[in-house]
Length: 133
Image 1 (cartoon, rainbow, N blue to C red):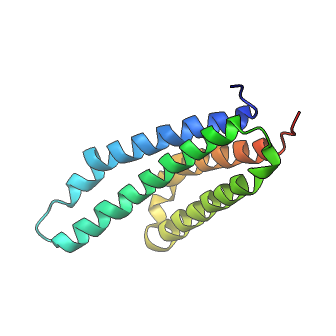
Image 2: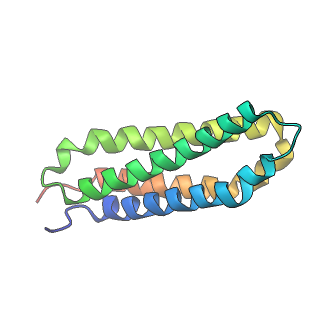
Image 3: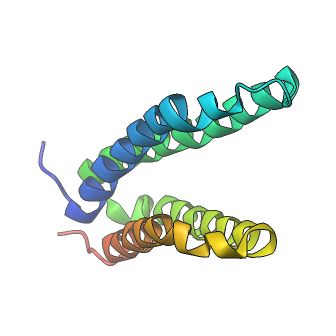
């Protein structure tokens, strides 16, 4: 098997790494901070599964892009790449909007997310420009 689209391959690896670090960060840092008596178990449960839904999505994106990187007819997977890129842009819009509306001082804290999403999306767009040989 030969890689047909190196951009998709890199995006796949990055997405899997994002999934792993997101899940580990949530388990080690974010979710334990919710273990206070003021937050109900229902809210903690919702936060847990919403957090890990993002991790699962990133893992599925990674697996999808790795498969797409080896796919012989790239034009057949181009639409999927655009949909995932659009989803990432919408994710960033929600992150930015939520931070802007509720914690403007925290806008600096989303710099890493912003850079990661820009790089991720740019690589996807570059990958959609690769032509079949």
